[in-house]
Image (cartoon, rainbow, N blue to C red):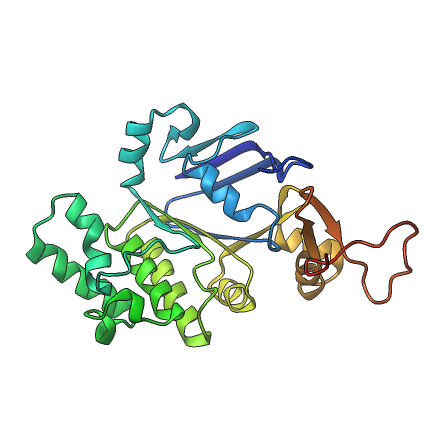
Length: 274
């Protein structure tokens, strides 16, 4: 359903590449989670998979099609089979939650009576029955995020790509979102790729038995393998969380651990320092 073959991605502002030689395959009915620290390239990887940014090397296939070789019109048609949860949500602020969710079906020419029934079902699955008629701009961030998830699932797509879909959720909301994604894989046979870094997503992924990878040093590494290197899952995740990006150059910098001996040379600047 989605295949990354030796994918390389340059940093948009130059400097060190964000991704170097990444490989990944997500099959129908499978959910895969990619975790990574802020700024290491997970969202740009999503953009590349959708044909929005060029690859430095390698290729990405969605539903058997090489994204880099598609014309813009063909890419638009392909994306109708992909449910996308963008990190910025991209909702229509002046429309209700229900009308945001039915929009993909309106584009497909589905009769309004059918699309509203389908929207009611998916909104209920995401715990949004009481918010369905409310304008999106009146909703809190967690609810807006679940509206975006509902919109991504309304077409019953063959592939779902969700970029940080639980970042605004509490524990209950994260469980609702992940259960909906799991159902898309188990019931509809969708391939589901989830990107994120919050602890709740990681915990649910482990509970559901989802395959987890980490984007570290430009490569996708199985989280279990990283844990072996770091002696435990907790240490592996701490390693991921300790990575920042020097946004002036795009270089990945590793914070020293508290028990590490200080390195010689200039001290790495933190994300908040100027």
